[in-house]
Image (cartoon, rainbow, N blue to C red; front, side, top):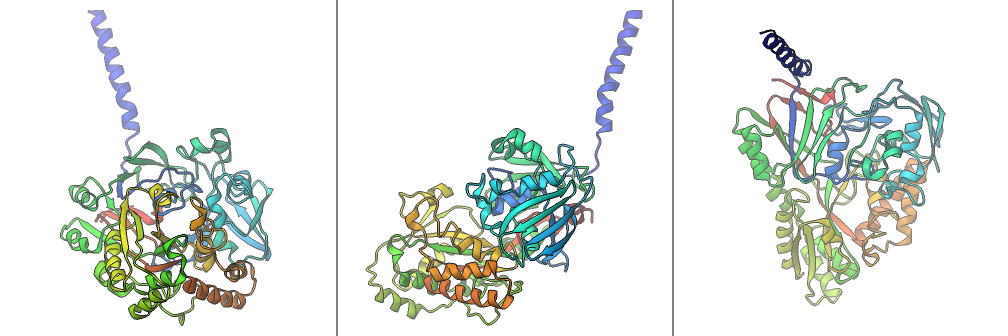
Length: 522
């Protein structure tokens, strides 16, 4: 009998012990599930600077200065506010001193100090002669080095006067990582298990299926409002919508405009829309059929962009007049719009001696919304002026970059990461860009005129706004005339979500899930 009583007590204690942690771990915050078209291959913030990467990493890492996209409620504002730095001061036209917040915790519990900032932004990692991750060089191009002044003070020194150094520090490639974790794990492990200061940290990653983040409750910006956030790869639009309707997902991205009425038919769903600070582009490779710039000009000139916007986007978006945005400080309102002139295109084709050679437009599926529909429409427009363009849909970017394949046209998008030509035009078309230095096939590189690159240097280095603007206009003229590519339009990005999710999209592809931009409840 005594043995049974003792056994019963032991079982009761065991049962209580097993329940206690569960009760202690009860967390009323929701588990947010986001259906996305694709997942990145790395969460190292310098490694994935494309649209699908920054969608996730923006809520895992912080920069010294933060761009307040919601300053005017638009989601595209460019006001600068404190981030990991609580204040900053210009020492001279090349030096910015920043005072770091004290007590900021990394995901692993370490305190962020100047050592972490110096490691994150030093030349060997992102912008030196042979950096660990060279893609950042385009955005860090003016930076010379970072100096630690004391534990909570750093100085960022540029190579030459930089009027936009503060905006640069708030943009792409300037996120701070944990130096100790990075050095102990190495890049390959860190890209799978990154350590930042942001409101969410890595919890689980299943390749090709999902990336799950957990709340970083010691976040300096306040306790995150979701317990977990899971980004689930759902390539098909119909599946992203069906999962939202069934309650499987809370937010679905990349919803086509014609599906908005479907979403709005459900009383528990809503949409949020914004025209992106991102332009859908075409790149014309000049190593083969399109070596003659007159053919490249003809391709650009025979695209009816207005018809594309009407047919695909319901006229809810726009095409920039030149490689710029109205939000730019140096915006040129009088700059000519992209010409639609089929007759002139036919004349250029005849002058070039074109004899119907096949022009291959190779494009990956699901790269950006409505890209295939746009390609099919443009194929008809090109055919109408006498250009023989063949569409070749492929599965991935490695097939686009294949040096053995004929690729005359390829899609692209240019994100305007800073409201200035140094945020897009310079890094994506300038002398350090992949367009001028094609990494997969040198012959595909655009042989830009020397004057174009000289003007780009002026845009970057001149301390005079008028001189910069004059150089910008002249560089745009050369770019349009040379036609290494062309702009189509800035797309309308539509997010569908449950009505109890209160979240606003930005003009960039960041999904900002910080407490000020993500709450729940009607």
